[in-house]
Image 1 (tube, helix red, strand yellow):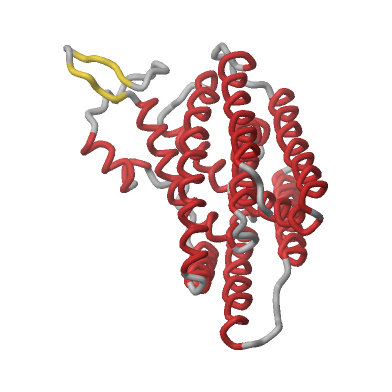
Image 2 (cartoon, helix red, strand yellow):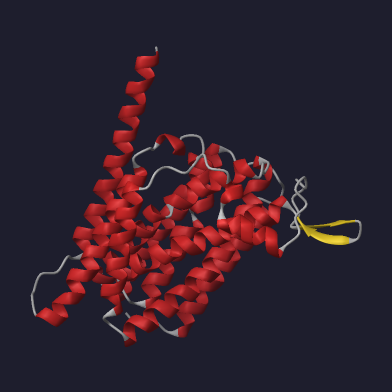
Length: 317
């Protein structure tokens, strides 16, 4: 799928306008988003993504549209990890709920810039070194298995996080600063606030998550336009999804296992599909199969979490 520079400019212009409207018009104040408005915004971004998939269908055909939808749902699923990080960070740094949306705005903006750079670099590398797809696949298999068996570290203090330790060494921090500013002055000395440290932690965490998710999405398509647009649509809806699911997200206990299996599956797909070029076999895992695996695993994880939670509640009664 080849698109002219005009389509790139138009797409990024639309995203910039939406970001400006979001911060400057729809969420101009510091009021906490309601669940209703968050659900509406989530529905808006999901609907917009599928409308965009419809445009791709009319412009380039059903195959590219399917690639976009698969890449979008894969990135959306893997982004669930980001939501748990949001909960952990906001609780640890005691970020007032009315300031969380503004902080996430800058977090998402930074994530978009980083991911676009990652994607262009990844596509360029794969275009030159096709065998890297096998390396990426092995890495995803390892990551998925590791995630499946790692112990829950949710209760561990973020003070022990390497990210926080690095930030504290680089920037002087005013620990009791709770105002929604990134920097403050104490006795004439410029210091970072908890607000800035929380943002840096979110950005650093997203950078680590991108190391997993970008290779996974590149397994679906190496078309730069498809990968960039699907990634951006998935990330743009993260904030509203967080506020819509904030109260119930911790109840989805089996999501982590679904994500680990998805990562391992995508890794296996990358290894098998790319190895076919070297060994001459004709076995290929299509994007239709990938799409079905993602939807089925996430659905099973959510339904199982709800059933187990209700069963535990009945035992307590």
